[in-house]
Length: 211
Image (cartoon, rainbow, N blue to C red; front, side, top):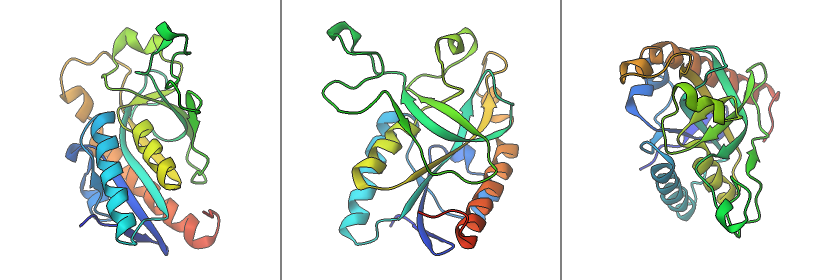
């Protein structure tokens, strides 16, 4: 059964992609839905999970997506929350649709994330199925890149749920050569994400954030 965490009285679904990002600091705070890596796995896991929770009368009031992201311009090992997310893989321009727009779907290329934790810096986020490295960052206007958040936001929209997306910058300043270039900061990011969860709890408890 998927765990929905009571966070200051708010039923919250925490969502992550990979076990490597779920360190001891986060383990002490919640049990997440693990989607797997990439937009297809994230969309599948979120859709199935939220549909089951709705059928059980256990739908959360808040979804929080946590993990790592790449960035060539943000502080390495820094923590940010997404102000908006786009889908860099979507390109139907050969049919006359602007890049990033899903055909026949009345949505903009960039989806805003309007709920924010006070005191955590905002950054724009690009989701796609590829690992971005080195010169590839030059083609991406957003501040940081990941592989799941756009899919998670679309599932949240379908069920009318607000999403907060927290990302620690694991790489991007240098071109990736092996998996260790991604994992080297994850222990720091684990601690920073856990502190952000505590900030979220306190903001909900004090009334500084309202859903």
